[in-house]
Each structure stands twice: as C-alpha cells, then as structure tokens.
Length: 81
Image 1: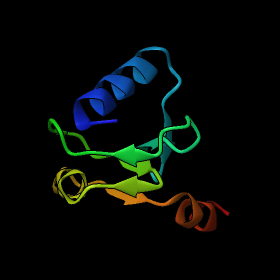
Image 2: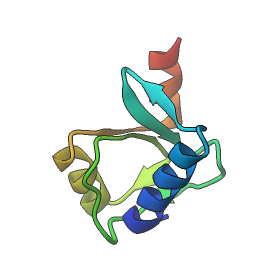
Image 3: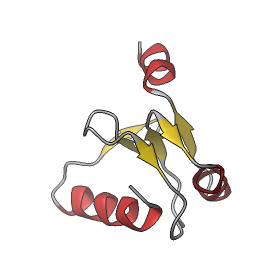
Image 4: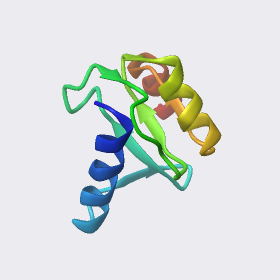
C-alpha cells in the first residue's frame, strides 16, 4: 500500500464511522487488513499511527513529518496491553 491509498483508506473509514483511534490519533492496523508493506509513494498530511510489518524509509519519513508513527504488529500488541 502507498501513502495515497492510505489517505483514501483513512477517509473511507472515517466517513463510515469505522476509524479507530489510539491516544486520540487515527489508528490504521494494516497488518490486520492483510497488508504487509507501506511504501512512500504520495504524501500524507495527517497525524496517523500505522501498524504494518514492513515499510520504506520514505514512508516512515512522511508519516513522522505529519506527526505520526509506524509500529510493527509486535510493538503495537505490547503498547495496546
């Protein structure tokens, strides 16, 4: 999945009232959706927490610049409990 698709997913989940949050920040668990990697094509201008197994440096930079963070599923599980 790329950042453009990620933005669209956030908008769709938000519109349907299905967007989860963590610490008041939109949470997208891509691993739960069967998506294994986030790549940096596109841009993101919204603070998000993204859970995914793998990501590119460009994707991580874009998420961090927007104020968000990326977590591995393992790290997410340890923070969620």
